[in-house]
Image 1 (cartoon, one colour):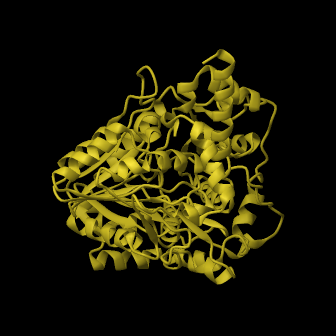
Image 2 (tube, helix red, strand yellow):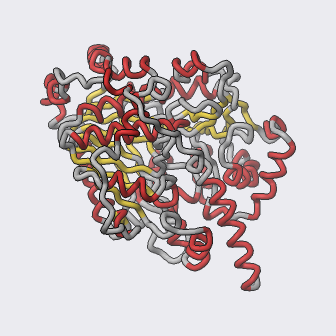
Image 3 (cartoon, helix red, strand yellow):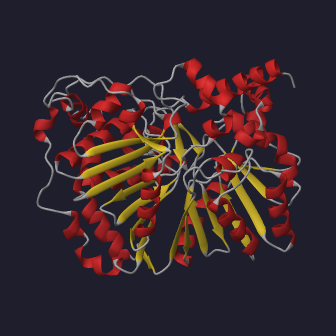
Length: 515
């Protein structure tokens, strides 16, 4: 290939990639206006996180409480309540932190926590930063808030030419992203899983939402998560936002700089009173979970994370700790492997792994997005190219329907009451259940990017009860009405417009290694 051809190909890859990753971030930021909505909203100072955990604090010293957060609204409510009653620290690590409705309200909660003296630290990957630079600097200017950007140089502070230059001159580094997701409160409570911070991950988007899954961890395993966060925070790849964007030393930030944001979050049109009521009632909900036994206490939980930088080998291959762990779990499977992955791009190595498992009697089912439900036609294009080879291994493949019947059950009730239509849904959960006893929930997609380039994190839980609960949800989504089973004779690609099918075909030029 000539030099000019390589440059042309690289530019097309870059443009396609940027079209993908910036879609969620480039939406118009909601406007804020001067009002007095906040006058009637008050934090309940009669309760505290310490008091709410008092009865289980002894268990948390040596055990880990585990609870799966299936619905987006419930996962959002948990984060909101924990932010409101955090006492010492909030550490946050995300691939995407959008400035849409959910993102702005999340920022409001974090600022209010910082105002109470809580130390807030945030790490976000550079490629998905959609906020204005000055807004980030203003946010970071709070004495109790610190923001770091992972692997900068491809987005924040760069124009289009600068972005293209980074990808063409330092392609591998530009593609090494932090895909970890962790929400840590007071060093003892963790929420991790597939969800980023944006409307569509919590079932609040009016057009398109994700079927996703998080896991709540309380107690001993939080030590492992804390160490991972510190590794990323101290990494040379994580840069203070003020080191990336030279801050004008003459800029002074007025004390009331967050007032407009507070009023936005207090506005009932933006933050429904019904949701605030659910947040306020969370202690009651939590007691019900404790009494029911749905919070499962375990003495051994594995939290596995890739190291910052992950792949320091030559080329785009190399793997990581999460990749190795998942391979070993499939190799040790005896009866069944149930998988949910929004993007399914297999290599010869992974197909052989599945084939060997099937040949020793392991039944494997995978649920992924259909062309009709996917938010990533680039990834689907690559999956489409190897779908036949994967089916020939003996794996059963199911593709999620955009009009899945299950969406009415998992969709936020307040949104259903507001809209006259039902948003479509796509799959975003990254989960496995092995032999009906081991559950994996995390950030890992079954694609080369998660395997070799992005840093990822997973939680491995060995509990029949947890596996049973997750598998119950999976079985529903595997069923007719929620997914199509794809075979060598049938696939549901024809369910979409000719335009989307053509668009998918044109993306086959993109190398599989970066998808």
